[in-house]
Image 1 (cartoon, rainbow, N blue to C red):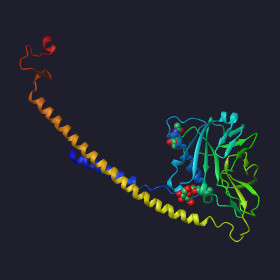
Image 2 (cartoon, rainbow, N blue to C red; image 1 turned 90 degrees about the vertical axis):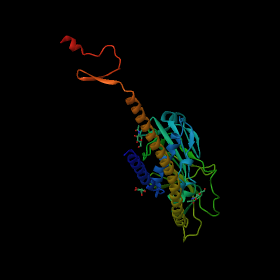
Image 3 (cartoon, helix red, strand yellow; image 1 turned 90 degrees about the horizontal axis):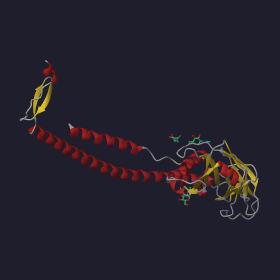
Image 4 (tube, rainbow, N blue to C red; image 1 turned 120 degrees about the vertical axis):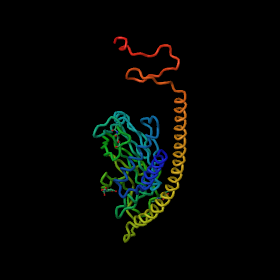
Amino acid sequence: MRLFLCGLQVLLLLLSHQLSAQSPHPPPPTNASSLDSLLQDYSFRAFLRRPRPRTGILYDAAATVPPDLTGIKLSAMRLRSGSLRRRGVPSLKEFSIPKGVIVKPYVTRLVFVYQNLANFSRLYYPPLSGYDYVAPVVGLLAYDAKNLSAVNLPELEITASKDPIRIDFSDDLEPIPQGGGSVQCVSFDSKGKASFRDSVPPGNACETERQGRFSVVVKSVASAPSPSPAPPPPEKEKKKRSESNSRTWITVGSVLGGLVLLGLLMFLVLRCRSYKKRERMKEMERAGETGEALRMTQVGETRAPTATTTRTQPVLETEYAA
Ligand SMILES: *[C@@H]1O[C@H](CO)[C@@H](O)[C@H](O)[C@H]1NC(C)=O
Ligand SMILES: *[C@@H]1O[C@H](CO)[C@@H](O)[C@H](O)[C@H]1NC(C)=O
Ligand SMILES: *[C@@H]1O[C@H](CO)[C@@H](O)[C@H](O)[C@H]1NC(C)=O
C-alpha cells in the first residue's frame, strides 16, 4: 500500500512537471506598447535581483531582456520625486534631466526606465515615410516605484516645468547622408503618435518637456519610389529567428526538464526507501516494546501498567471510600 502511494506521488509529480514544461516560451511583443510593458517588467527585475536596491543609481537591466530582444539596452533608476524636482538627474545615458521636473500623478518614489531599441528601432517604430533614422530610438519612461513586482503599470506623466529635458545623441548619431534635408528630432507618445521638433546645437541634441521615445531623422534622399525599404526584411528575419529561437528553447527545455525529472525520480525513490526503512525501524521498536511489555492490569475502568513485583497493587481511591 505504502509503495503504491509512493508510486502515485511520483506519477502525479511527473504529470504536473510535464504540464508545466508544455507552457510555451512567450512570443516577442508585436507592437511598441506591449514592448513598453514588457520592458517595464524586465527593468524592474534589475531591482529585485539586488538585496537592497539604492535610489539614484542606474541599474543595468539588459541581462534580463529575453533572447528574442537581444540588442535592446535597458536600465532603470529609482528616485524620490522630491529629489528629482530639487536636483534633477544630470546624466542618465543620453538624457539630462534638469531641476523642476514634476511627476503626475504624485508618487513618493518613481522608477525611470531607460530603453535604447538599437537595431529594433525600425521594427517597433517604422520610419515615417519620407524620413530616415540617423539614431536609435531611445526612451525615458516613468513608473510608480511602490511595487517593484508590479506589471502592466501605467506610465507616469513627467513635466519639465523650467528648462527642458535634453537628449544628446552625439555618441550614437549615424553619418548624415549627403544631400539629406535638415536633421530633426522625432518623439513618440505612449500611443505611438509621432511629433517633430528641430534639433538644437551642439551635436543635434533634442529637447522635450515630457517623457517619451525619441530619435533623430533626416528627410530621405531623393530615392522617392521606395521611401522605407527597411521594415519588411527585419520582420521576416525576425520571424525566422524567433522560430529557430523557440525551437532551440524547446530542445533546451526538454533536456533540462528531463534532467530535473531524473533528479526528482531519484530523490523520490530514495525518500520512499528511507521512509520504508524508518517504518521498519518503528515496527522493530514496537516489537521490542511489546516483548518487554509491562503487564497491564485492569484497575477500575482503566488499564494501567504494572511491574511484576509491585509492592502495592494500584487501587482506585473510590474503592477506599466504598
Ligand atoms: C499591442 O499588442 C497587444 C498584444 O500583443 C494587444 O493587446 C494590444 O491591443 C496592441 N496594441 C495596439 C495599440 O495595437
Ligand atoms: C540586433 O543586433 C543583435 C546584436 O547586436 C543581434 O543579435 C540581433 O539579431 C539583431 N536583431 C535584429 C532584429 O536585427
Ligand atoms: C505587487 O504586484 C504584484 C504583481 O501584480 C502583486 O502580485 C502583488 O500583490 C503586489 N504587491 C503589493 C504589496 O501590492
